[in-house]
Image 1 (cartoon, rainbow, N blue to C red):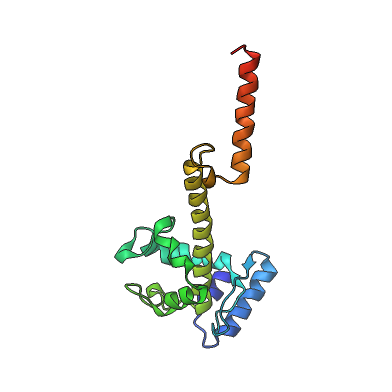
Image 2 (tube, rainbow, N blue to C red):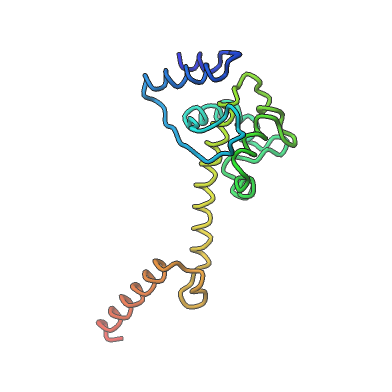
Length: 177
C-alpha cells in the first residue's frame, strides 16, 4: 500500500506526502532525520524520510550512479562526493529536482515527487558523509607517526602510541634487554 501511495500522481503534493507519512506512522517503518535547509525550499522542507530516500536512490538513481553513467558520481566514490556535499543541501536538492549538468530533472524519473527526490538527496549525502569521514580517519591514521609527524596525530593516537611504547620498554626490561 505504501509503495502504491508513493507513486500515485497527485496534483496536491502536500496532501500526498501527508498521506504517505500517516501510512508510514501506522506501519511504524519510517525513520526521519531533520537537516538544515533554507527557508525558500518550498515543498521539500524537513524532515526527510531516509527510508523513502534509500528506496528511491536504490531503485531509480543507481541506474546512473552505480556505474557513473554520463559522469554521474558513483555512490561510495569519496573524491566524487567530497566537494559536492560541501554545497548547501538546498542547492543539491534543487539540482536533483531541476537537473544539473548531464543529469535531467529528477534523474529522468518524472513520476517522483519533489519530496521523494529530496529524501534521496539527503540519503546519499548522509551516506557519503559517513564514507568521507571513514576515509579521512584512515588517511590521517596512515600519516600519523608519533615521532616524525606528531602534529598529524590526535591526542588519543598519541596516548595509544605512548602506552604501547611504555609497554615495549617494560617488556624489554623484563627480558633483560
